[in-house]
Length: 325
Ligand code: NAI
Image (cartoon, rainbow, N blue to C red):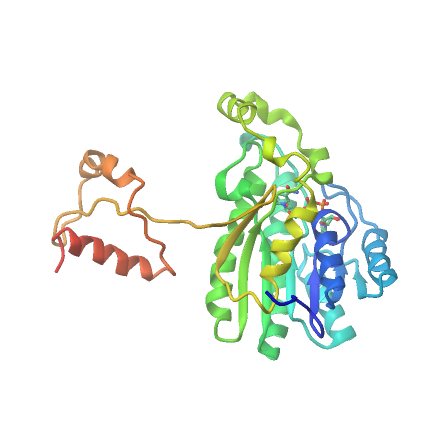
């Protein structure tokens, strides 16, 4: 593969003052991108603000001969999102790449989550992705080219105790990116979701209260972390993120995972299921109960490309079973 470069590309990385975002910004800049380093500079639980986080990374980039500008606006408001994108437009006149990455944690039991723990998490992760994503998309559409990477989480895709607020927001990235990818296909804009894994300052707020859930504690204790040793660094996730926002990457509407140097694609897949008898009489609840094993069986998967594709697949399954002509 030829070198992957970002010369003449303008990239925005939100939450780029530390951890994964810093890694993305440094690598993009090293490969020639002009980078808006956005970071509000708050704590790992989203308290406070400081301009130094973004400025430090800009300094690192410029010291290495790259081009970068700091943005200390919050992704969690519409005005903040607009200001972040405007920084790119004012400085370099366009936006080619967006890595929506900013975020923090406020973990608690599902039943105890307060509005102070739900709203800011939804605001920064889910709404923040809209607030930065929409103006960035408009700029990309004007330029006829764009690469968007939304940051999901295996917490959202697969589940994690004490993170209902965060998991719901992160799972939302999948629906968001699917829609953006389909719409963006008309304008040269690709959109994917990354499920990263890296030890970062977010560990500080991963209070282990969730160990009170017996099944989860057991699962955690029996987890084999041996492969992760020394590989849970942002540097192991950076290459996948940077590839996904490169011109070389033609993938869109995908979900990709980075875990300790194992890189893979994740999909919501649909099993064949049970088909109710021919005709327009709906099944009874009891029919669902009687066939629940078949409904639940995970085999013969299909991967609907979009909402309506599911209808085509259902008709195909029904036809194969002689229930539909
Ligand atoms: P981090 O705490 O090092 O970086 C997140 C950055 O976002 C911080 O520098 C913070 O100041 C900034 N930020 C927070 N609120 C902001 C706002 N309103 N506006 C602008 N910037 C804001 O954490 P890390 O681990 O690098 O996380 C990056 C992303 O990856 C987050 O979205 C996180 O949820 C996600 N993630 C991380 C995983 C991991 O294993 N580290 C696993 C799955 C997802």
